[in-house]
Image (cartoon, rainbow, N blue to C red):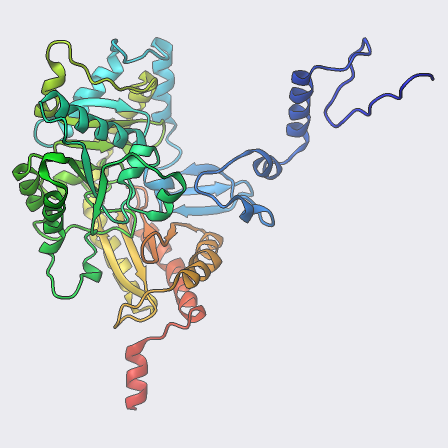
Length: 498
């Protein structure tokens, strides 16, 4: 042969029959097809899937946990191992896994109308779902604006509050007050409300105007104050910022990040008074707490307060489709309904007809199957099981409500001494997370505040699942106590006395 040698054919690349080299597009497509044909799910996941909030380097030497199937309160990985999903995937599969009937509602809707936008148009599923959501919401929260998820719902609520005050002649009211450690989402507006420094720093500067007050952490109440301090801190912050500059206060009924901080008695009633006094909107962020998580349709109902705006998502569809919503009072919506005004905001897929149909089927199942009643009936037994773990040296506090609880882990029960950052790394990521999963329990070991283990099972769970959780938690937390050299002070005291 004369001339230059042929270039080698790389894996997945095909030589054209006319002798010319394939195009870049053909080469890439062929390479991907070849890789997919011969690669395992593990290999493909490690090469192509970028997981959320995940240290990707952690899977260089170990498998990616691949969940392949779900039914009821359980899921199975690609190897067929069963796990109790005590986190409802991410606080959202409230009705349980494997409900093909819920998903089927979306397929049936697609036969009529697969998609049409809510931008200047309406369609029956969005109309019917909006009316139903409004009928379940407290007070006069009658206007429903659909989104694709929780961060979008919070982003929408922040923008709604700002534009509301512009339309009503108070354009300087733009600021937002949230709580420390609270998580409200990942978009820049929602992230400005989020009170977790480590999540904020990589993306600063954020949307300006947000400030933070202490979370309702009664377990670590500062010396010299009572629980009224938490609400009064909001009033103080509004005064400090200037009431004429503050648009909204955003709070979860039970704060997720930090480990299920519950409100003290009368907290939300006092916050409502404060917001009314200073002409500030109260946003109840119920992305997690709505749709039965606390045994009511909304957390605001559980704690008997009426916000101006509710944000929600997750279990609106029990995660069988991505959907969120913002629910506003008639008062907040009224300026947008006049003359040439409009809320200049939207998302392509907000109110998607298939998602709306799935949400309706989900709410049908809630009512037909007594899902809220199951939470109310079994909440006490769930809490009793968790309280029984207090005898383990490392368990310092148990808190939460409904099917939304956390265990706070401590070095010393009497002093409530917590673990250092390095110790948390060893405790949570070095042992607890992996060991709980290895033993078949999916929950969250979290240190965005003090270290906690969070449990948020599907709302269909009952005593059988509680027993399974207790068996695994007791074994793993007892071993964690030993590994972290946490002792039972009472036993040591009596031992020394003896």
